[in-house]
Length: 571
Image 1 (cartoon, rainbow, N blue to C red):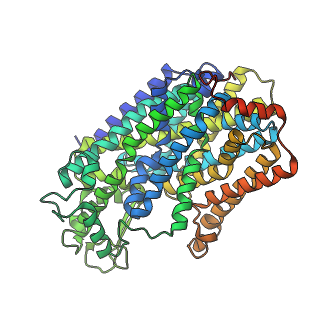
Image 2: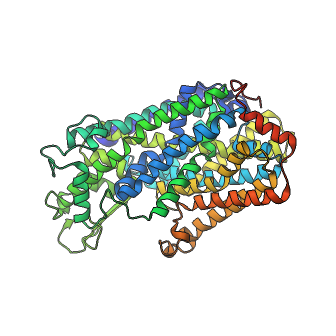
Image 3: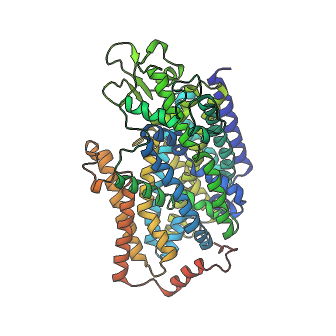
C-alpha cells in the first residue's frame, strides 16, 4: 500500500477517534467548557498537558531547527524544558489554589481591577493568536505533503477538525482528545527515531545511538556521529555542528525568554485548573514533565540523523553532488509542496547542498521531522504515522489556544466585565461563538505566517514573558504589589516587546541583523528584556502609589500558606 493511501487511513482513523471523544465528552455547562468541571485525573491531565505543550513547534520544527542551527538550536530545548520546571514549582499550585478559570481572571481578582483584567485579556488574545499561527502553519505543512493539497487548503482542513471538537467539547472534550493525541504523537516521534538509530548506528535506543559510532555500510562508518556531522558541516561551508554562532548574550536572552514565557503561557496554566485538588496540580506537572521528556530527549538524535542523511542523500558519499535525475523520492515528493527547491546554478545537472556560494538547495526547516522517515527509506506505515503525529501535535495545541481565546472573551471580558447579568447558557453560547471567530482568524495567520513554525512560537513566548510572567510572579510572591504597578508593567512590557518584534520582522526586516539589535538581542530573545522592563516599571510605580489593600495582602498570603493545600478555593 502506498504512502498516501496509508496516510489517509491512519490520519482518518485518528480524526474519527478525536471526534468520537469530543461527542462522548461534550460540554454541558460553562464549568465543563472552561475547566472540565475540575475533575480530571492528574495522570490524564499530565498527558493532556504534554500534548497541549508539545505543539507543532515541538513535534515538527524543534528537531528541524536543531538540525539546521546545531548547537544554537539547543536554546529551544533548554528554554522550553526549564520553563516547565519553573511553572511546575513556582506557579501551578498557587494558581490552582486561587481557584479561578483563567489567567486574566487571576490577574483581575488579584489586582482588584477591571482594567488589569481587560489588559490581561488583550495580552492573552495577542499571545494566543501569535502562537496559533505557528500551529495552523504546521497543520498546513503536514497536509500539503501527505494529502497533496496546497498549504492553504491544509490549514482549512485542520481548522474544520479543531473547530468541531473545541466548540463542541470545550475543555472537557479537549482534555480527553489531548490524551489520545499525546499517545499518537509520542509513538509517531519515537518509532522513526528507533528505526533510524538502528540503521545508522545499530543502537535500539536513539539516545545511545546519538553518542555512538556510525554502523558499517553507512557513509562515515567507524566515525562518531557528531564527529561526522562536524566534519561534514565545516567541509560544506556550515558552522561546526557542535559549536554555536550566536553570541552568548543572545543565547542567554532567548533561553530566558523561552523559560519565563513558558511559565506565562495562558493555555498551559489553565490546564492546572482542571484537577480536583491543589496537590493534584503539582502531580500533574510531574507527569507532564515525564511525558514531555520522552519526546524532548529524542529530538537531538532525530536532528543529527536527519542532518547526516541530508548530506549523504543530496551530496552523495563523495560529496560531489547527486544527479537530479537520480534524486531520492523524498526530494521529488517535497518539491511538489514548494518546501524544497533546487536551482542548478552551475548547470552540471547535480544537486548540491552547502552553506556557501556552492549551495543549490533551499530546504524549509519545518519539514525535517516529517521528511525524516522518507529520507531514511523507512516503511510507508512509519511515514503515515509521523503525519498523524504532526497533525495531532498541531491540533492539540491549537485547541488549547482557541479555548483560552474563547474563555477570555466570554468569561473575562463579557461575564466579569461588560455584561455581568448574562446567564450561564448565554455565556456558553458566546464562548462557542468566540472560539469559532478565533478559528477563522487563525486560518488567515496559518496561511500567511510571519516566520517558520518554531520562530513564530518563540515570539509568542517573548510576549508572554514580557506581560504575564511578572504580573503572576508578583501576584503570588509580592503581596504589596498594587494594581497600578502591575498594569503599568504589563502595558510597557508587552508594547516594548511587540514593537521590537514587529519592527525587525515586518517594518525593517533588512535590518534584522546582530549589528542592529539592541544590546545584541534578537527578536526571539527580546521578551527577556521586556520582562525586566515590566518588573522595573511595576516596582517603581508601586513605590509612588502605595501598597495593595490589606484584604488583598491577606488573600495572597493565604494562597501561599501550606495548610489546606488539599482543597482549592471554589470559584
